[in-house]
Amino acid sequence: MNDIPHCDLCGEHFDNIFEAADHLMEGEDGPFDPRMRLPNGYSLMLGSLLRQIFHSADDVELVKSITEMTYATLFAAENDTHEMKRLIEESIVQQHMSVFDSELKHLLDGDKNDG
Image (tube, rainbow, N blue to C red; front, side):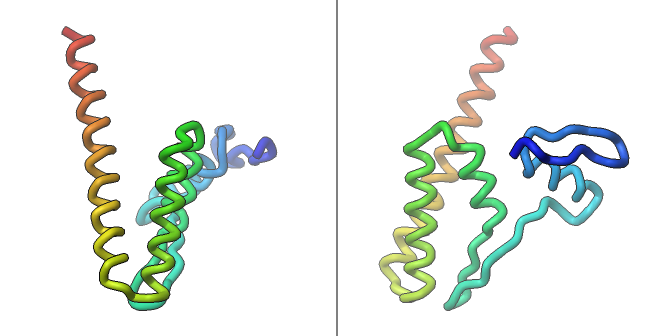
């Protein structure tokens, strides 16, 4: 989106709508993260999902994984299957560990460059 208006108060320009929304929400309870309530007690965090897809756009495999996990969540919510719940939970844990591993590697590599 090239037509994102700048902030009327401070004049800041934004590269994307996520930055603009974050700026508008400063001082609020947290970032704008709408949720969609699904059957069987599930909810889909649409704001987080869209941010993750947007920021992962160059990583095709990660976008595929995010899309697949979202689809599995929708399936599990509609069908309330035990096996699908287990697969989703495992997938979420693996995804978080992957992010943790990459952040730790970045941190450790940064220490090497500093020393």
